[in-house]
Length: 427
Image (cartoon, rainbow, N blue to C red; front, side, top):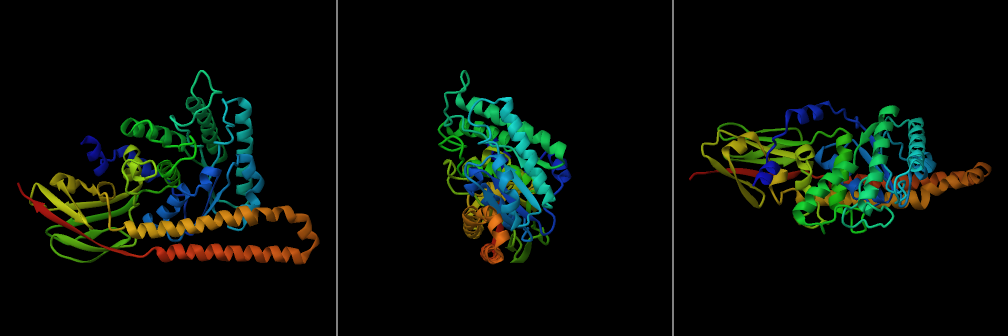
């Protein structure tokens, strides 16, 4: 019961509120965000969650996102391709997530740290030289405490040993971020913390970092998206809806009153709550991990407050689902996104995420199969203007295709009509 109450209500401590208010947004108007990393990024899950969140939940349709994941890559690999591959997109903001491969799947040594630091410094310098205004150095994630099995970390288990290595690389990222004047996202510790809580509740077989030990499923990727969205300055205020049973309803930006009566309100919303997969226990579901880290509390606040309720409890109906809450809970505010297992936004949210997925799939093809190879023809294009023009035209067509898919994402962002009703419940 205590866990459920913590999930439902917004008892955010004053220090958390102050920290959120102080977080400077790294996404100014018209930002162009490049999401960069290794095969975990190329899975196109946390990047998909981030893009969908920014457009549909934060309402930032002015932002454009491109993912640049590359399987097997280390920080030095990105340094070698950064200027060429990112040049077409002209990013103003870049998040990076390296370290899983840089750790070399062996115990940490100083040479591993030195190489990682040198490559990170190099690509930060390149990105700054390209005019990137904001950079977020994301730490590596974690390996699964049950499924990452290696024999070269004795007397530690493989997971204990490699998580220590990844923690060292995380600390290098944190130090460099301060030294180089860029932002930092700790992906490592939130994954470890959520994994421990989830396994304690759902069993050790519940994987958070994947059955191979290091490629997370949707659950682990949601934690990664959370870490980066927080680092980018997202405040989590998706909706604040006040239903006054003796007065007019009030709504926050992204929502408007379309009708209703005394105990209900009809709304039209252009900002969606983040909608989860339905399974509450499977690692393939984003919903299953939500109770074990503060995604809903810090990023997904779709809050209903009820004023002047003349009964000790009320039944709240939203879409096809009804739940009961006490008067005190409703006065304080109920986070509908956390409380309701299904929402009127689920189908619309899925359509947006599917469109984002199609766009990001093309971006992988565009970069890995075409754009990155342009750099190997420098001598030939310098000697052959016609060949140079052919490459330019190919690049322009690829950009046009990506922009068409980006436009399709925005077309999928349709307003959602939904009704909230509050029925007093008397003893």
